[in-house]
Amino acid sequence: MCDTFVVPPQFTSQGYTIFGKNSDREPNEAQAVVYLPRQQYPNNTTVACTYMAIPQVPETYQVVLSKPFWMWGAEMGVNECGLAIGNEAVFTKVPIAKTNQGLTGMDMLRLALERCNSAENALDLILQLLHDYGQDACGGYENKNFFYHNSFIIADTQHAFVLETAGKEWVIERVKGFRSISNGLTIGEEYEAISPNAIAYARKKSWLKAGENFNFAKVYSASLMTWASSCKIRQQTSQYVGQAYEKFSIESAWEILSSHFHDDTSFVPHLSTTKDICMHARGLLCPNQTVGSMVAHLRPQKQSSVWITGTSNPCLSIYKPIYFDEKTHLPMAPSRQYDKSIWWKAEKLHRLILLGILTEEDAWLLKMAIYQLREEIHEQALNDDFLFLQQQKEGNRITSLAFQVYQNQVEHWLTTMDLRKKKIAAFPPLFHFYWSKQNRKAGISI
Image (tube, rainbow, N blue to C red; front, side):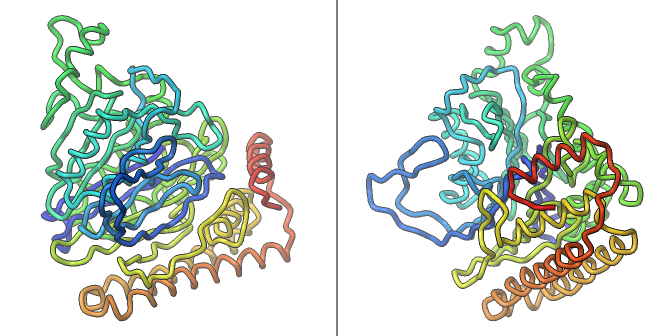
């Protein structure tokens, strides 16, 4: 489950496109922050995507990605040209063979970022990849039966598009204002373009009755999985909140991605649901959680700024700035199980909080400490003079500082709670059982 949005320049406080996404996946599916420089390749080489290899291009662009540790593709990313893309799992009536003989939506996303310099070019490439290879590819980590189709928000400094797919059928909407997507099809009767066979295929399958107006979302959506994901509620929430800002800002993006369906004063982790934009797993009714978040400021003729948590659950994290510079020092990538990476350390802290190993006073102190870190880091990195004039000189330092001060805070609280050995709070047995199982798989001792 995921949530993605884009805000065109005319609706933002600084006049630049803003892109944001929460990546919601399995709780033990650690997500890595990756920087890739421009690279050149010999003729007739291939690139090994998650399940298949395809021909490589002569040169690829610089990219910053947030990606599950185990797959080639990425959940979200930005390239040096100011192109940003995020994808969503969508559930449709079009059957999937489940042979892993296609590209994942994450593969298509990364390929487009590496190869394209504009939203229009990226849109064309993804449609070509969809036609040539299809999307018969498992997107699950432990759940090897999790196959789905994809929707995308594709944005650059001037233009943005929503692309929604069902098998090899597709529909496109040009973004004109704040626009969000979640885990369901949203484009109905009005669209920019549509695949040549989409209407005929729907009629052939008897999904479109004689005399009915064609509505892509209505015709192609698989109702049960779409309902179970609560995608309509999350999409409507982000759309309503996003449109309510008089002028949208980077801070506005952080607020949306850190929000819960119930406000923070009444949010209870063991009652969390798929209605939450900042999602916390609890078992069968909510098997996913936010494992990574990204916000990007896309500026024409200037380097874009990319903000990544590099950890799960943005409500307990801070966004760290990443710059397109080979000298930028990124944190250690997480592995399959608990290790010294900031992702896994922060996730252990998250799980201790979920299980109630914090007094109310501790919880308040932790929240205040995170707020203070946010103010210190964000004040420096959001300063226009810093971004535009001192980026090459100071960018690497502020990135390293942001990750280090957050990691210091996480390690402080882990040590504090370990010394107390506080008894786990009396939450429902199924909630305890679920997290005990996840912790054993991850090698986390609580």
